Length: 356
Image (cartoon, rainbow, N blue to C red; front, side):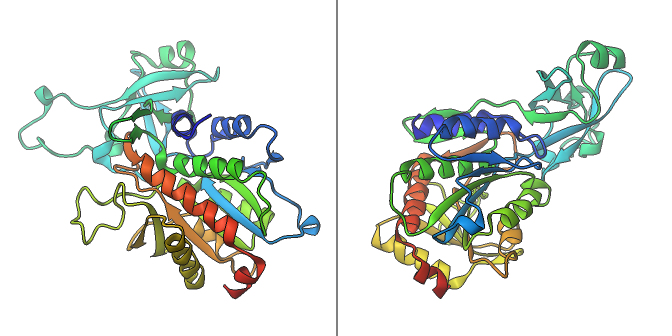
């Protein structure tokens, strides 16, 4: 499977926080027999995890979260509409009038649409106002509670995902799809580990597709305690900013390469690790862009505090319109990120890790 198809399949997979099974199954199918694979009870997927007492090399953990932002059914109205809550961070203005899929009791996804009020019924005073999510509903095309529950078999607690199919434009080399935060990171891990399978490295690479990042980075806590890595690289799909900031202020631009994060409110990157990565990028002519974030956070917030402090870095592929139904990513940025992570893995040693 080539990288384009890999990205598309990960994007299309359904997996809101707590319901990442489809993503894990896809990753297991792609990895095949290349590495040992296992899961835990919170549905983290581990690729090539070696028990601590059997290790002969330092461990570099590649982490990407498998969950996507979505919704969950909270209750069902007498007219069949579904009241819902958000899983992950959403802006109210990005939610209405979009298609979604609701998982029913038979394990089938039912098409629906998030309600919106036609302009014919909107007063001048309310024109242009954004509806609060608590006043929105999901409509699956039913007209009664009984029809929704009995015929469509939808119940309280059902996960809801954006109904989007990923596409790739060969002319622009852009992907348009959902869940790039953080399925693009999942794809990077699979690509890197498959490409380095027969490479004699000075470290052991362990890949983790961690769960429930959008609901508090919960899977990463469990995963880090299990893997106990010496270094962690968090692969992310961070928000792009080049569509609303000038060239000199933008730090998450499409086609500008892999994004290396110095800081966000939840973590300061290990500066010695950052310098090592800058050196690797320069020596290998790999395009990177650096960011100092005033908001947001990733699994790195939990990982870097475990095991006496783990040198950790966040490397990302910028996503336009992340945390919405649709997003754009650049294939060129993906390629630069894969090159960067491979170069790090091929050049890092125990002595370098000890210097962090």
